[in-house]
Image (cartoon, rainbow, N blue to C red; front, top):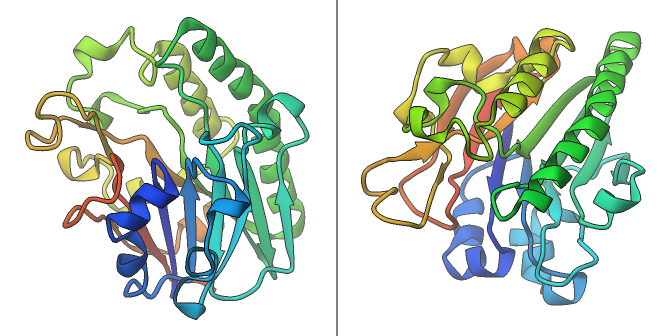
Length: 264
């Protein structure tokens, strides 16, 4: 069994103070993908880089301090680690980290949020335009070589109406814009990527949410969004055995998504 966890930390130092590393130590995870580090290499002590002495962390930091960044923890050392997608604008923001093992690649990805300003929404659209061919190339690589891929991400897109509580009032808001939803539909329908969680729970709503606004009583009332998910190539997606969103403790405004694959 292969256990893969993904979590937007909203600051790795903040999440650590809230007990994230203690929780991680008892998850028996093989690979853990994290987004929004908000830290640099010099900010991470050894216990954060090598949690429990059983996992090794790999990171793609943003050039801007206190901003963005992604990471990946692995119990078994990868054969290769790739930082970035080859685009200077977004590679400077630390948004993509790929790790390769025999027959399997896992990617930690942080899609830009467009909620803070129209300029950031335009940046998000630019990223989507640039990243779509990357997703196509990864799928082509999978079909040509048999390599399986899992992309663990804060996609910052709720794909359908069942993926957020208040969909009617959010149709003009970043994260649920028609252009964003259409893009995600094409990623799945045209390119063939599979939403791993939805293979087990195709219609589930409230239990699937992974993010809640800090405003109002969103967490208490479960007014959430499902914007963190694992997209996988069809072969490994067909092996999903269990999937859950962990909500018994809070380390961030996001919740960890845990998926077990019966692979290889």
